[in-house]
Image (cartoon, rainbow, N blue to C red):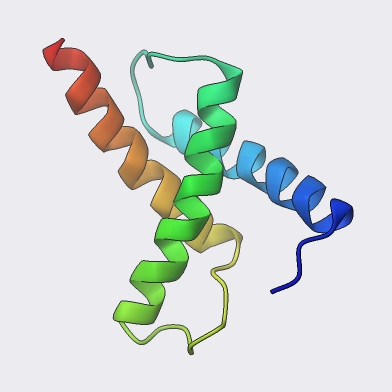
Length: 87
């Protein structure tokens, strides 16, 4: 995968959208702001890709789509809430 400026901007925008949608789908207050939302969305896309490849939903080298990114961000947000609540 080649990273250029356009790819990085697309990843950030899609990460923000996926993280924001995951926050909307999960009720309750969330710790963190916009930066955490973007990071959760980007990490969610990576997690969604990895889980999809492990579950044989995606071929090797194939990336998760928007739904996979939202599912991954949702899972990461759940874990983040559990960890932040214990502090």
